[in-house]
Image (cartoon, one colour):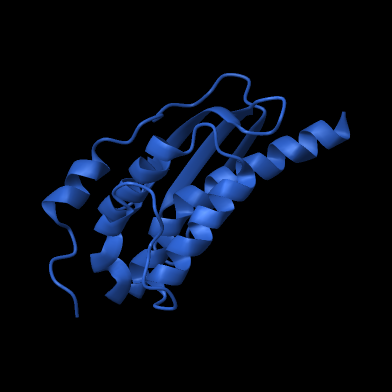
Length: 146
Protein backbone atom coordinates (compact mmCIF):
# COMPACT_ATOMS: atom_id res chain seq x y z
CA UNK A 1 0.00 0.00 0.00
CA UNK A 2 1.08 3.56 -0.62
CA UNK A 3 1.29 6.32 1.95
CA UNK A 4 -1.32 8.85 2.93
CA UNK A 5 -4.12 9.09 0.36
CA UNK A 6 -5.48 12.55 1.15
CA UNK A 7 -2.30 14.59 1.30
CA UNK A 8 -2.18 18.30 1.97
CA UNK A 9 -1.45 18.83 -1.75
CA UNK A 10 -4.53 16.79 -2.77
CA UNK A 11 -6.71 18.75 -0.37
CA UNK A 12 -5.25 22.04 -1.66
CA UNK A 13 -6.11 21.06 -5.22
CA UNK A 14 -9.58 19.84 -4.20
CA UNK A 15 -10.55 23.31 -3.00
CA UNK A 16 -9.06 25.16 -5.98
CA UNK A 17 -11.06 23.87 -8.94
CA UNK A 18 -11.05 26.45 -11.73
CA UNK A 19 -14.14 26.87 -13.93
CA UNK A 20 -16.44 25.72 -11.14
CA UNK A 21 -19.62 27.16 -12.62
CA UNK A 22 -22.17 26.27 -15.29
CA UNK A 23 -22.15 27.99 -18.68
CA UNK A 24 -25.13 29.75 -20.20
CA UNK A 25 -25.77 28.45 -23.73
CA UNK A 26 -22.96 25.87 -23.95
CA UNK A 27 -22.17 24.10 -27.21
CA UNK A 28 -22.25 20.79 -25.36
CA UNK A 29 -23.12 19.44 -21.92
CA UNK A 30 -22.69 16.13 -20.17
CA UNK A 31 -23.69 14.86 -16.76
CA UNK A 32 -22.04 11.66 -15.55
CA UNK A 33 -22.17 9.66 -12.34
CA UNK A 34 -19.70 7.02 -11.24
CA UNK A 35 -21.36 3.70 -10.47
CA UNK A 36 -18.38 2.81 -8.32
CA UNK A 37 -18.41 5.68 -5.85
CA UNK A 38 -21.43 7.85 -6.65
CA UNK A 39 -19.38 10.87 -7.67
CA UNK A 40 -21.13 13.21 -10.11
CA UNK A 41 -19.70 15.59 -12.69
CA UNK A 42 -21.45 18.01 -15.01
CA UNK A 43 -19.39 19.68 -17.73
CA UNK A 44 -20.44 22.46 -20.12
CA UNK A 45 -18.21 23.36 -23.07
CA UNK A 46 -17.94 26.12 -25.64
CA UNK A 47 -15.72 25.37 -28.60
CA UNK A 48 -13.74 27.42 -31.05
CA UNK A 49 -14.44 27.14 -34.78
CA UNK A 50 -11.64 24.57 -35.03
CA UNK A 51 -13.09 22.43 -32.21
CA UNK A 52 -10.84 23.40 -29.33
CA UNK A 53 -12.03 24.21 -25.85
CA UNK A 54 -12.78 27.93 -25.67
CA UNK A 55 -14.55 27.91 -22.29
CA UNK A 56 -15.97 25.32 -19.96
CA UNK A 57 -17.62 24.97 -16.62
CA UNK A 58 -17.78 22.22 -14.04
CA UNK A 59 -20.17 21.16 -11.33
CA UNK A 60 -18.35 18.46 -9.37
CA UNK A 61 -19.62 16.40 -6.46
CA UNK A 62 -16.83 13.96 -5.69
CA UNK A 63 -14.29 12.94 -3.09
CA UNK A 64 -11.15 15.02 -2.65
CA UNK A 65 -9.35 12.92 -5.27
CA UNK A 66 -12.07 13.53 -7.86
CA UNK A 67 -12.04 17.22 -7.04
CA UNK A 68 -8.24 17.36 -7.24
CA UNK A 69 -8.41 15.65 -10.63
CA UNK A 70 -10.99 18.23 -11.76
CA UNK A 71 -8.63 21.01 -10.63
CA UNK A 72 -5.75 19.53 -12.65
CA UNK A 73 -7.97 19.18 -15.72
CA UNK A 74 -9.48 22.62 -15.22
CA UNK A 75 -6.08 24.28 -15.12
CA UNK A 76 -4.95 22.69 -18.39
CA UNK A 77 -8.00 22.06 -20.61
CA UNK A 78 -8.64 25.46 -22.19
CA UNK A 79 -7.32 25.48 -25.75
CA UNK A 80 -7.18 21.71 -25.95
CA UNK A 81 -9.06 19.49 -28.41
CA UNK A 82 -11.19 16.48 -27.51
CA UNK A 83 -8.29 14.29 -28.65
CA UNK A 84 -5.93 16.12 -26.27
CA UNK A 85 -8.29 15.54 -23.33
CA UNK A 86 -8.79 11.89 -24.33
CA UNK A 87 -5.03 11.41 -24.53
CA UNK A 88 -4.50 12.90 -21.07
CA UNK A 89 -7.27 10.67 -19.70
CA UNK A 90 -5.77 7.58 -21.35
CA UNK A 91 -2.34 8.29 -19.87
CA UNK A 92 -3.81 8.89 -16.42
CA UNK A 93 -5.93 5.71 -16.56
CA UNK A 94 -2.91 3.64 -17.65
CA UNK A 95 -0.91 5.08 -14.77
CA UNK A 96 -3.65 4.36 -12.25
CA UNK A 97 -4.08 0.75 -13.38
CA UNK A 98 -0.31 0.19 -13.26
CA UNK A 99 0.32 -0.28 -16.97
CA UNK A 100 2.31 2.98 -17.21
CA UNK A 101 4.86 4.58 -14.94
CA UNK A 102 3.88 8.13 -15.90
CA UNK A 103 0.56 9.84 -15.12
CA UNK A 104 1.14 12.31 -17.96
CA UNK A 105 2.81 15.65 -18.30
CA UNK A 106 0.26 18.10 -16.92
CA UNK A 107 1.35 19.99 -13.81
CA UNK A 108 0.28 18.41 -10.51
CA UNK A 109 -1.00 15.16 -12.09
CA UNK A 110 1.74 13.28 -10.23
CA UNK A 111 -0.01 14.22 -6.97
CA UNK A 112 -2.53 11.48 -7.76
CA UNK A 113 0.15 8.79 -7.33
CA UNK A 114 -1.08 7.74 -3.88
CA UNK A 115 -4.40 6.70 -5.46
CA UNK A 116 -2.85 3.96 -7.60
CA UNK A 117 -3.38 1.39 -4.85
CA UNK A 118 -6.97 2.51 -4.26
CA UNK A 119 -8.87 1.17 -7.27
CA UNK A 120 -12.18 2.27 -5.79
CA UNK A 121 -11.08 5.89 -6.26
CA UNK A 122 -10.00 5.58 -9.91
CA UNK A 123 -13.51 6.23 -11.27
CA UNK A 124 -13.78 9.50 -9.33
CA UNK A 125 -10.37 10.61 -10.62
CA UNK A 126 -11.28 9.88 -14.25
CA UNK A 127 -14.84 11.23 -14.03
CA UNK A 128 -14.00 14.92 -14.76
CA UNK A 129 -12.15 13.86 -17.93
CA UNK A 130 -15.04 11.61 -18.96
CA UNK A 131 -17.54 14.44 -18.44
CA UNK A 132 -15.56 16.92 -20.55
CA UNK A 133 -15.05 14.31 -23.29
CA UNK A 134 -18.79 13.55 -23.27
CA UNK A 135 -19.57 17.28 -23.47
CA UNK A 136 -17.30 17.53 -26.54
CA UNK A 137 -19.27 14.63 -28.05
CA UNK A 138 -22.56 16.35 -27.26
CA UNK A 139 -21.34 19.52 -28.98
CA UNK A 140 -20.28 17.51 -32.05
CA UNK A 141 -23.67 15.75 -32.18
CA UNK A 142 -25.52 19.07 -31.95
CA UNK A 143 -23.39 20.60 -34.68
CA UNK A 144 -23.95 17.57 -36.91
CA UNK A 145 -27.73 17.83 -36.37
CA UNK A 146 -27.83 21.43 -37.62
